[in-house]
Image (cartoon, rainbow, N blue to C red; front, side, top):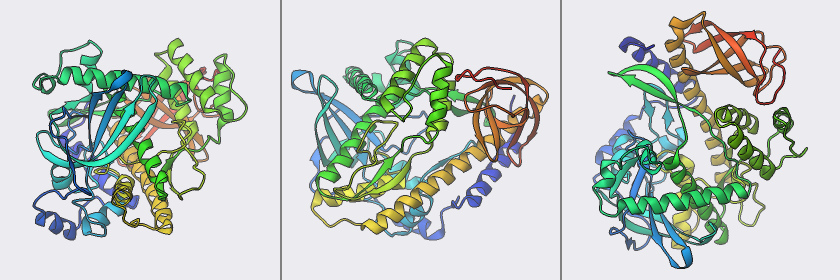
Length: 499
């Protein structure tokens, strides 16, 4: 099951057209290229940076990532507490507001990750060099300094500029294999004295934060993301990329850091851009899924009850938990960006069980994070906010729209890639789970390759979460169409009859 070089080029053409069709610019205009050509060195962060170059900072990201937004380091403190320091790349220092690079970033608002290529929000000379916290490079960064108590509460936080050096560029899968006892320590980790103990401390604190968050109602979901597999430069498969301990380490540090940024801006009477997820409108279907598994949930949305239910299901049926997670994710709906005026009630994030949450930790890849960085730097230096409330409200709506458009592009290209891989398998049957039911149709997902398609025959009476047996009827690479027909009756996580 593989594509060929010509098919890869076809996917690249499809990706470029999908970007244009969804209001995203796939190419950097000449003014951006000229601004980048003139850049000589990274800009400076606000204030007089502290010197933290001696700390054992490291980055953990995907194997091929070079646009490194954050570093982390742990410093043991008194009474079982640990200081977790998260360094964030100072993108604003190199990308002035309203410059050509900033205007392009403001238009797209996010990097777009498609199967054949990445469309970066910032030119690669910035995101993978001048504004990247690259290994061995001295950089000025904004540091979010968190004190995590023995009970995993964040008992204090401080934000400041500092000079940092990334001592080890690490990757999720190899670090996770080492942490979980499945593999040797990665070479970059072995090369730095003390980094092994450093990572063990970070992992232990992250796992404490995870348990604390879930006890407070954060949703422990395990979703499968499609990872493109290439052999000799040719697409050969789309496999699920699963969660692991290293990904959790970064996830829970970033959640804590983003919470600290939001509360800092609020405490300084500053308006901010918040990331919110409202209580799900289709809560009744989540209740039905639980009922089909012999569980009960309250009639009204309750994050803590849902979190406890998910934890029980993961323990009881780990193998099928990603399917249940996917169903819940689809029913929760999408997060969005909103203006949070100083002193006004916060809408909060239902999935994280947090009242105060901003996006601030990925300014190379997301424009809301760059906006928040500018708001934060103004607050740190006592300067007026760079954006008024009306501007922030408009920017929030635009970033939410473009995030949805980027997701459409990624999904569109992923479907074309899956259609390409599935072309030789028309007529074969697959186990599937229903992932969406709306006015445009009914959608199902198969796992080998990880792909989603439309149920064009036998869709009557099925709903999100139902398990069905399907036959592949047709593929269309150019349009990204994968059509299935239902073969048999099945029962999904919710236990509902799929006839």
